[in-house]
Length: 135
Image 1: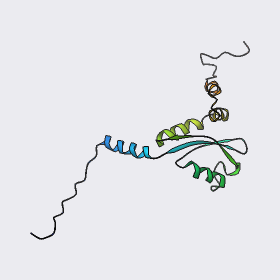
Image 2 (image 1 turned 90 degrees about the vertical axis):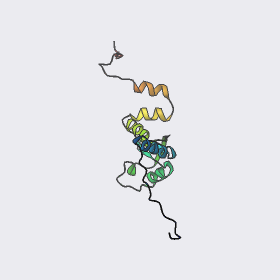
Image 3 (image 1 turned 45 degrees about the horizontal axis):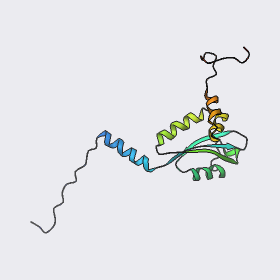
Image 4 (image 1 turned 180 degrees about the horizontal axis):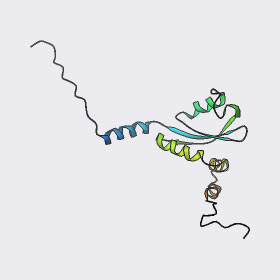
């Protein structure tokens, strides 16, 4: 027998799917994500998601990307931001916000939850609560 220690073969540990999912969740917990709403100089709004809100705002303000929606609409003002620990939740909320009207986004930004609820109500003729003003 030689004086060298024998090396053991490395055993690759097999992870169960639930362990892999839990590992991803733990990684996501350590990161922070933000959805944000900008008001552009022309009054339009821009909604986005990022993992570094300060860096992203500087990028919008500097106009680094000429094809970006905000490039010709600078300066921009941060109206609203919300922090998330999970990127999937942040992206999901961003997609919802992108479908909202500017009025509804501004109500959220100003924490006017009564107006937000009014703007969220269905106004379709087929809706059970539809009551025309002229009747």
